[in-house]
Image (cartoon, rainbow, N blue to C red):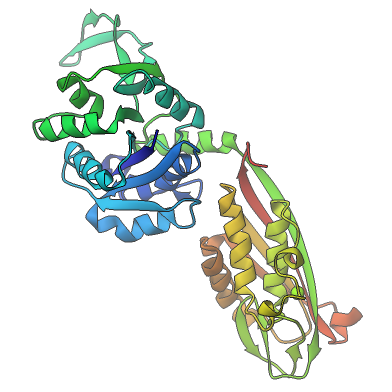
Length: 386
Ligand code: MG
């Protein structure tokens, strides 16, 4: 099997409220679509992922997919879902998949178990789709008055991903009348393909309305645990005319001595992030004995720690760093420092705090021998993360 995932995310999603299209609105602090993409990128049976996006959303998509463990390609979509899926299938022909899973971008909680179930269904049929029982009594709405009960017998609720033999669904899509079908199983049925039902999952719901985001946030919080890490660093003053603190160059009577740029702020933040995910310390990842880090700017270290968090499916919740020195004055540079850290880690600046204190002229910082920094980081990791 060579399996492609085709994610359909070209809609405008206006029902979920004003602002960004719903697939790019934040869920757990990152674009909703990122959760969906991560689910497929992280599945060992999925060989490639292609997303159909709205032509206006290229920049949003690049941000949403940045740093995922596998590369995620995209193609521009069309006006209807059906036409968008066909555009995606046509683009996939170059990659010669044997099977394709077609999934709504707005279903962020598709689980590995559900993907497995659809793939198992495909071993014996042209198509497989996850379905759930209809529990509520169905009744006709006669202009606001309760009409007759409609039998639930033989009815299910269809979800995605809907999986198919690639050649079969591509042919069915090419032959289907335009803009008539709301899902791919209907197109498969039109072409007399045999599609089997596999058990769906309630949590694999589609985020459509504004209140679905509240449900999604609540669900997400049950899937993640909070980790914290702390960091501490000191560098001594040496001859020089500036220091670099939290990525910002500040003119000063001295420099800071170090193998890299001696940025105590970014070093302590790097250690805090590494600590939160149990990934050792900055020296493990960037040994001082390695000459390639001589004079390096410390944003490299922090960006690497942020990348490690993302590679584990984690999310940085917030960061707080305290710079400890008598001079230079930190206050005038605080906002620039917060902005710089937020940029390096691709998080919102509201999640970054920079503080400063003196030690009342006591101790080594009080004697102006050097600068210290301590930091704390809070990270949300998937519960199955190691
Ligand atoms: Mg250091």
